[in-house]
Amino acid sequence: MDLKTLIPQKLKEKFPSAEFEVSDYRDELTIKFDKKDIVEVCSFLKSDSELEFILCSDITAVDWATRKNRFTVVYNIFSIKHNFRLRLKADVDESDCKIDSVSSVWHAANWQEREAYDMYGIKFNNHPDLRRMYMPEEFIYHPLRKEFPLMGIPGSLPLPKK
Amino acid sequence: MGLEAYIKDTGFLTTQVNAIIAWARKSSVWPMPMGISCCAIEMMAVGDPKYDIARFGSEVMRFTPRQCDLMIVAGTVTYKMAPVVRKIYDQMPEPKWVIAMGACTSSGGMYRSYSVVQGIDQFLPVDIYLAGCPPRPDNLLNALMKIQEKIGNTKASQFQNVPLNEEGSKLPELNVIQKN
Image 1: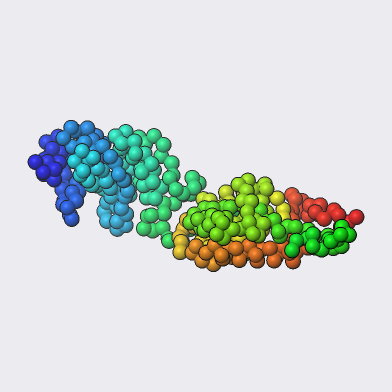
Image 2 (image 1 turned 120 degrees about the horizontal axis):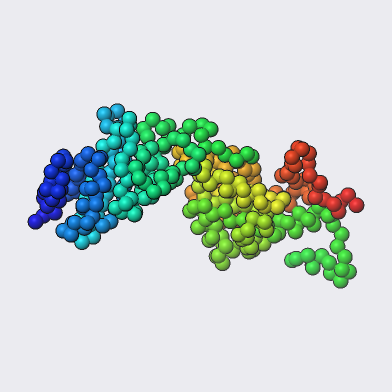
C-alpha cells in the first residue's frame, strides 16, 4: 500500500480519539493534529515496523502573528527504510506557549527544540536542557517573533567597552 | 639592500632611536589571525607562496594574542562573539594595531540584522578599514603596507593606545631609553 494512504490510516487506527488533518501538497504529506498527542504520535511513527521514521531532520516553528493559535510547531521527519519524508504540525497558542518535548523519541530533537525555543519562545515540556541555542543566555527576547524589530532592541545585547 | 649596505666596513650606524624602533617594528608585524568567517580564507591565501606575506615580515601568524601586535579581524562579528574578540585584543601587548578586514567587520556588511555588530569600531579601535566582500589577498597586503607606513611614522614615544590604570592615570611610559 502507498505510504501516503497507509500512514493516515495507521494513525487513525492507533489513535481513534485524535483528529488528524491530512494534506498532500507538491507530493509532500503533512499531518496536523493536537499538540497533546505529539509524543505518542512521534514514538509510534518511529517504532512502527512498517514506517520506521527514525530520522528527525528538523524541528522549527511558524509565527502567524494574528491568528488564534499564534504558533505552529513543524516537525520534518524521514524514514530511511522507505526514503519517505513526512511533515507533522501542531498548533501552539501564545497564552499557553508550551508543547511536549520529543527529545525522548529522537535525541536529535534536543538542539532543534532549543533553537525553536530561542527564536520563538515556545517552551518544550520535559526537555532535558532547555537553554538558548544561538543568542546569549542573558538575552530576553525571541528574535524570529513577528513583533521583534529587524535591527533588534537597542541596548539588549551589551558590547564590551571601547 | 639591507642594513649591512649602510654599515660597510666601519661597523657603525648613526640613527635615531625612534627611527630604528619604528623600522624594526614595521618590518616584523606579527598578526593575530582573528579568522571568524569567510574573509579568513582570503587571509590564508595571503600566507601562501603566491601572495606571500613573508615578503613584508609578517608571516608569523601567532595563534596566541600575547605574541602579536596586529589583529586582523577577518569575518562577521556577532554580538555573541564581540566579548571574545575584545578579550583577545586586550590580551595583546602594547603597542598594537587592528585591521577591520572586509565589509562585515567594517560596517556589518550585508548582515543588517539584530545579531551582527554594525562595525567593530563600536568596541575596538580600528586602524585600517579594508573594503571588499571578501577583500582580495592583494588588498590585505595593501592594508598591511598601510599599517607599516603608520608604524613607521609613529615615534616610539607616541603610542596612542597606552592603557589607563584604575586611577585613570597613564602607566609608566615605554621609552625608557630616551629618558636616559
